[in-house]
Amino acid sequence: MAWDFETDPEYQEQLDWAREFVDAEVRPVDLLVETPYDVADPVRQALFPPLQERVRERGLWATHLGTELGGPGHGQLKLALLNEVLGRSKCAPSIFGCQAPDTGNGEILAHFGTEEQKQRYLGPLLRNDVVSSFSMTEPHGGSDPTAFKTRAEWDGQAWVLNGEKWFISNARFAAFQIVMAVTDPEAPPRERMSAFLLPSDTPGIRFLRHVELADEAPGAGTEGYISYEDVRLPADSMLGERGGGFEVAQYRLGGGRIHHAMRSVGLMDYVIETMLERAASRTTKGEALGRKQLVQEMIADSWAQLEQFRLLVLRTAWRIDKHQEYRAVRGDISAVKAVMPKVVLDIVSRAIQLHGSLGLTRDMPFFDMLVTGFTMGLADGPTEIHKLVVARELLKEIEPIDDLFPTEHIPRRQIEAERLYGQVVEQLADANRS
Ligand SMILES: Cc1cc2nc3c(=O)[nH]c(=O)nc-3n(C[C@H](O)[C@H](O)[C@H](O)COP(=O)(O)OP(=O)(O)OC[C@H]3O[C@@H](n4cnc5c(N)ncnc54)[C@H](O)[C@@H]3O)c2cc1C
Image (tube, rainbow, N blue to C red; front, side, top):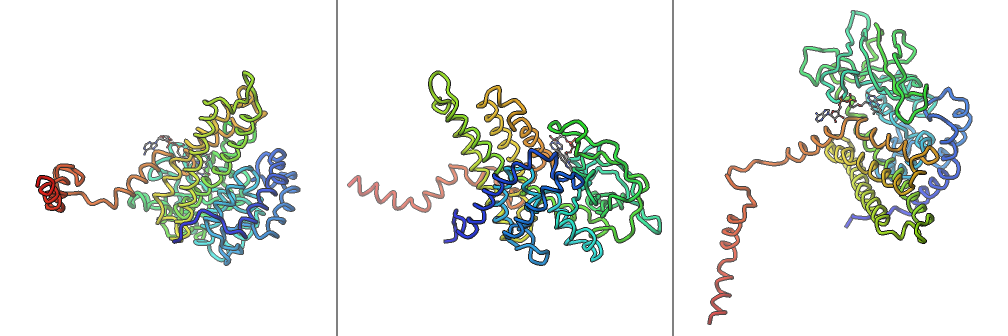
């Protein structure tokens, strides 16, 4: 009997340490640095390394990485539990070496990179000496990757990259980008693109804008609107097969999606804590808010919604560990991704309401979290498409029946039941009559 909802005591001790460390020493850093990705920010550079060292000493640095990459190979379930702690803080994922999108980009480099690329980029990335970005979405539409136009053409000596990309997170801080570009426009739609490793100092990369998310300060936009103008890439910058860009992208997206979900569980746990404190402390009409039944409903709904989501996330993480690949659990990951924005938006909205006017101010963190909720419904693919994936994965297993009425049509089941047990029922009826 292998079902178990308890964490082994040794790892629980690690989680307890992480929780204390994050609350006492990492969350204060969130208030002092604009973004954990700006490796040129002197405040970040002064505060991060000593904290990262403490995490390394504790054996909790990049725990998802296998031993071949210098990690302990804890896998996804343990990472899920750790991410529940890290999700409480903007900087904690970087301080524990498991921040998006570097985790996924690192996985791509480890799997598809040449030895030289690994030495030059993977090592520094895994140490968080540099950060990276993933460049796929285009300004005319991100949901349909078969419509992307950015081209890489081989001119006999190099791949020449031309086109525009949109909403490329943290590209302004990145040492390299992984870029998806069309190399084979005549091939079937899903075999047209290839993935490239593009060092950020390559001539021809131009930022048209640093687009600001609604919760970012003016000038601090992290979403790159980028133009590639005759960017030259050597032959070995291609990652994976020519035309195999989708496969490379899928390699990272599975992890990216589930890791966001793990952190969202932690963030929402934190929000519920704030709701509980407020409900217990604020009074109206002579009693605590928490004694009002409609406030109790907000708390109960939030807790139950989060716990359902958490169980789905943990089960999905457990299934990834079991199958040792993301593709086998594609439907589960899409289900997690599809329900995540509603969980975040519902809980944060209730927290705002419960805190009254204060909830809407910058004195509390909730409004920015609404942006996070909507981001979860878009980044790494919109909710609608993930719902399609869930349904398709389920339908894939189903054989159509060759009958006008469904298998569960009650008149037919009645006949089958009578065929099976009719004699017994009749014997009982005869016995009752005599
Ligand atoms: C904060 C943030 C960070 C991001 N970071 C990155 C990054 O680092 N790199 C990167 O490449 N991209 C990134 N993205 C882009 C993200 O992948 C796209 O926003 C997403 O794929 C949707 O593309 P779009 O924004 O162009 O919306 P569109 O493609 O214009 O779609 C708009 C809406 O149309 C609906 N829709 C679209 N297709 C369907 C369909 N088939 N069925 C039903 N409804 C549909 C959905 O409601 C969708 O939200 C980021 C996005 C956000 C918000």
